[in-house]
Length: 416
Image 1 (cartoon, helix red, strand yellow):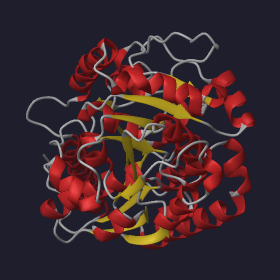
Image 2: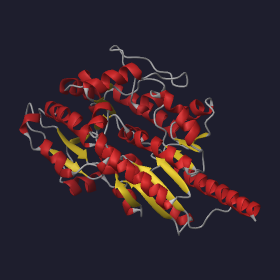
Image 3: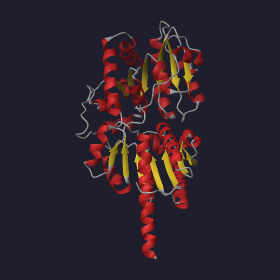
Image 4: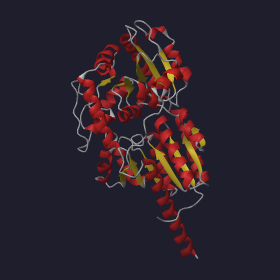
């Protein structure tokens, strides 16, 4: 490997909770290799704690859906301009862009114009829709580091330098907190089964998903058999979720006991089953092996457009459900079949959620089958033996830095 700059300036951009988590891991690993690293850009609280000089906070730009982004466009565009200005002023040696395509693809254009090498980690779902953006990847991205196995063949068939590095969550050990310790920490009743509710990592997702989850919780808990835990993402304030929990309008029966918790993985590890909004949390549930169902709701316009636009390539075998919807849960795409139920948009009702979750809470063959299917999907997400996704991204950073340094040396020698 070429010798790299020992004190590089690196631009990072991650606009969502999962990207913030991955970005913090990348920064921590890079600092062990490049102690004089200077980093700046867009990130959340975890990246800030890892040392990122935040030009823009992720929590200020994390919006979702077509109509939602349009409503927030003036603010988002203002923050985007601040990021562009920082890139032009500080001239990074390399950039790491993590998911968040609506902002990151445009940042990649600026970076490319400045001859800054770009590593894109966690591919946007161009294989599902907005495939015209593929040309942006071809033109603006030096290395695409993908976390789902079918993505590598999709990109390589389309002349993109892509590598499947495994999913960062797939290698993590199970949480080591015991059930009794967890019960004590959150004042939970260890004699009851716990159900995890994961409404999403953005305020708009919480607003659209959590109320129906609470209705379902009230139905499930009609006999007082369960307690419910809600992990709070780093991009959402506790107080925002508490407003929902304290509003009696969301409970159609006896109010269930719902507790806010800090860590999604711990909640999934100790829950009997879970209700999970589509997104990274579905992968967390998969690798932990927690039976779950997937729910999601967006604005009617966003859903109608997405339903019309989503098309999967041959690399992803997928069948429509009885309502004509293609699967959206990543675990179902990785498995190549529907192993987890999906309740989307109008089908996402409290009654449907309660009825669908019931077999997963009982000692039922459907629960046992899902556990086996989740274990198989988990295996497909693992990186090659002896490697890790974060280490492979950092290897790519050092390699590109070395190439850039070598190219600069050649240019200097030629000019002399």
